Length: 125
Image (cartoon, rainbow, N blue to C red; front, side, top):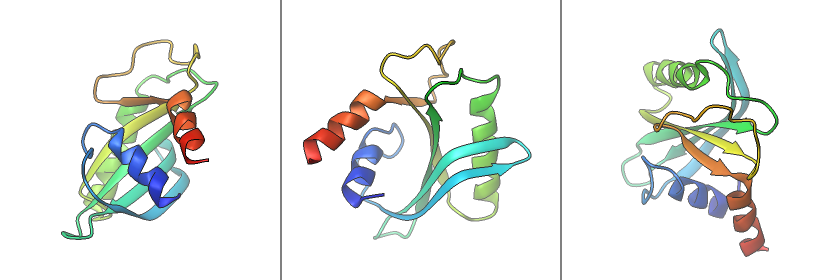
């Protein structure tokens, strides 16, 4: 993940907007008994050494599953217990006009559309 895109994505979050951090780990399709996290991006703050993660769900053509957000939180809490990071946020990325989110996600989830992501890519091109 490019540093500029990582910074942009962090700025789209609720919990970590304005925090300067660098990517130290990217996990793709991490799974356990509660299910799968499409992307887990772990950041580290250079001054404090504090770590936080973005748990990112790629909602392209699938509906929001029952308890999906809760399962993401369970996986993140397990990682916190293991000392991998101390905070997290769940983000869903989806196409601009999709019917895949058949019910509104909880307010605790940041929904980032692919149009927003594409606007970043176009700006950097």
